[in-house]
Amino acid sequence: MQTISMRIQYDGSGYHGWQRQSRMKSVQETLEKTLSKAFNQKIEIDGSGRTDAGVHALGQCISFKVNLTMPIENVKSVVNRRLPNDIYIESVKLEPDDFHARYCSIGKTYIYKMYTDRERNPFLDKYYYHYEHTLDLSAIREAMDCFVGTYDFKAFMASGSNAENTVRTIYQFDLDTSNNKLAFTITGDGFLYNMVRIIIGSLIHVGTGKISASDIPSIIMSGDRNRAKYTAPAQGLYLKSVYYTEDELQNFILKN
Amino acid sequence: MQTISMRIQYDGSGYHGWQRQSRMKSVQETLEKTLSKAFNQKIEIDGSGRTDAGVHALGQCISFKVNLTMPIENVKSVVNRRLPNDIYIESVKLEPDDFHARYCSIGKTYIYKMYTDRERNPFLDKYYYHYEHTLDLSAIREAMDCFVGTYDFKAFMASGSNAENTVRTIYQFDLDTSNNKLAFTITGDGFLYNMVRIIIGSLIHVGTGKISASDIPSIIMSGDRNRAKYTAPAQGLYLKSVYYTEDELQNFILKN
Image 1 (cartoon, rainbow over the protein chains, first blue to last red):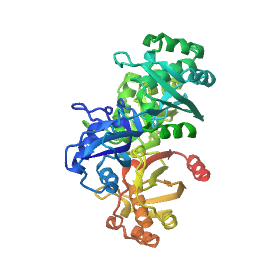
Image 2: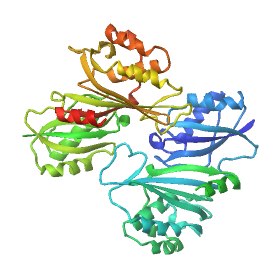
Image 3: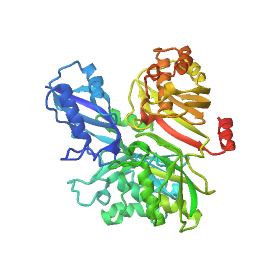
Image 4: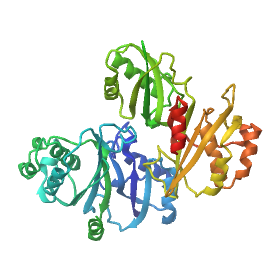
């Protein structure tokens, strides 16, 4: 048996999220079925993490064990030919036996895309969060700085989810704007359930003046989910990269 | 009763085409249901033409009769608020009683989008036709010129469809390329069923060398659908504009 990793892109709009579940089409199940057919054996994959319904991936990472029945160089094209058009394998790699897409991850980058415009664009609906009003971008940038560092992010975790350790480190948090489009890029050692969407939700509240940038540190400190109420919608969220070595992580941070 | 026209945009990927049909979600039915609720009366709409499953619109035009129960200035926002996010009304206009979105149309522009790349982009799948190989663009441009003018386009009509008159005039046919993306823009007085997709299919055959640009005039002359075999897929096609006056049509042609 060999251990393989793959970098995967998917348009999440046609799926009920990453995780395999009965009766609903998931990205995981679609990949497992396709891989099982391609390799003619039952394949079970591990993803670096789950993505919710409607969330996209530009660089999800998966790993699995397989009895390789074809040269590793052929895997990418053989499997891509069998996949539906909204999922694509970018690269394939032979890994050491103890590699695991989830447990070996040391960091991740997410992108959150939105646009502000009085007019709604029906073609962006599945890929951007549409916000009708303009936002105070300088207040948002000020608030973003408050998230960078090592904190207990319990206030930014979906209620009902439980993580033993809710301390995370955000390494970098950037905002690109062009015309009326906003792209937030956030890199950290890991993220709690819904953490990125709750952070973006809070930034939108800062941008509309509902709360001020200077409230953010005390919301983090409070550890109280009720103080970070708003979860930005799924369709703007993209898992951009998963890192397995310090070099990969540092390269991304330096480039951006 | 007043006569209203609306310019509509829609992402066609979630619909089984324009035309109302039992059990399948269509753009027409979705609009009619929403308009009927908004105006609290049964509304039936006419589109400038039908779009097939997966085809998009940047500027479809519809018309309908209504007993206006609100100021015309409010209609756009009231109806948009009730529409699903993949359909959007761009503008609303009060028309003379005899206006009809289909019969009064004097021309249309379609755009066809594709990209050529060995790598497939899962996010473009519903909006572009993906072609794995590079195309001979100068042969394609040469072939495009053969379509401009007034011809019997019977060879470029879906088999099985019947139009009394198959003569159409193509006013303008342009190709924009940037990186590996191609956008064909074609303007004519009207188009037969599947005509744009069959023309694009023939251009792809020219671009790969299966036929040569100089074959196009004789294919047109032949009137034989078997000589224009390939219909390019629906997802790359966008109804860009519908014209109701010579001025509108000339303005578009001059601008492009």
